[in-house]
Image 1 (cartoon, helix red, strand yellow):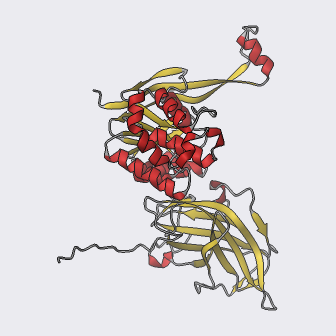
Image 2 (image 1 turned 90 degrees about the vertical axis):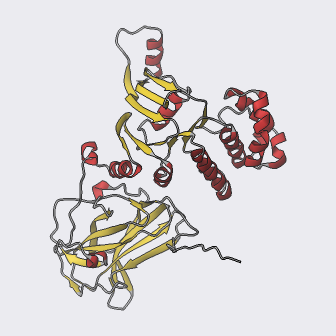
Image 3 (image 1 turned 60 degrees about the horizontal axis):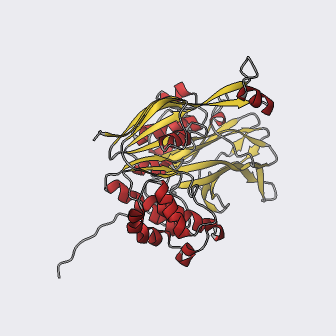
Length: 443
């Protein structure tokens, strides 16, 4: 038996792109001497190996070729060139329920899918109780699947794929299906597979799951293997790619200079502070994708001209590892003289609920008077204690008017998303970071 469960050798997948249907027909019948299509390579000479018993993650931006290579490995697609060697029985969690017949009952579809995976009826019978218990959809298993809710459909499809005993498990963004309790069962089953020494190839945008489960990660970019290595190193490079960093820059070790004029990196720099700096031609904001539904308003007497999220390695990124220190920076230009401006930030859930935030007034860091033409940078540095997931960041510059009322000079609500990468989530929004001990008491 080979030491490798999967070997991908110089695999390319090329699609012909036509501008018009007429060009497609002429090309199909050989009626044109010149090609009427453009070549698009979803994969371009991709090579990597997966050792037996290893869990390997594949990450990359949209269009990198992640799902394409999984479909080629599972035989859904044929490569244009190159070879794939598989040593072991595969179960794939790709497009859940793709092989289901809508007119068949749930039970009939279990047999249908199991047969398509290469199992005998006797082998499926042995697994049937586990499949039905895992899906937990009751007597609906005896009804045609066309009557199922979308939740019941994916639960049954997942149960079939995960409870057939494969040697190699292929997973494509399929662990977070159903309600939170079913998701917990899915992740527990995934853990069981790892403990049994199964080979797992795992594609996900959930960097927390990639970090927690994978022994090694392959990073793809536009159909090519950009790099491979430890989850931490590949996630760091991927974070830079997500901010629009050029490939050669993403692969290099890069830092951003501390904006603090003192240049010191002590504990004081981890407290919220405001300092005067000279404006320059560099821009942090170009490294981030701004929310197209951004809610922006204010008098513009003070204007946020730039902003940044900086992780503890000094990288400009909106992906922060839970437990790490990070800094939120906003650069504000004052177009008029303003007394006591206030710099703020707020985190919201994706449902719009305010979770946490602070401002320079709360932190007792004051600018008594900002003159027209001056530029200030407010920096807030703290540990990321939010649970793994997606959040929305808002920043603003406000103050109090002559009548004592709050004045918004410039507010950027739901400016950009913040991804918290975590391999351990607890209950609620925050992790209490408890120190836990368990002591056996002798009776």
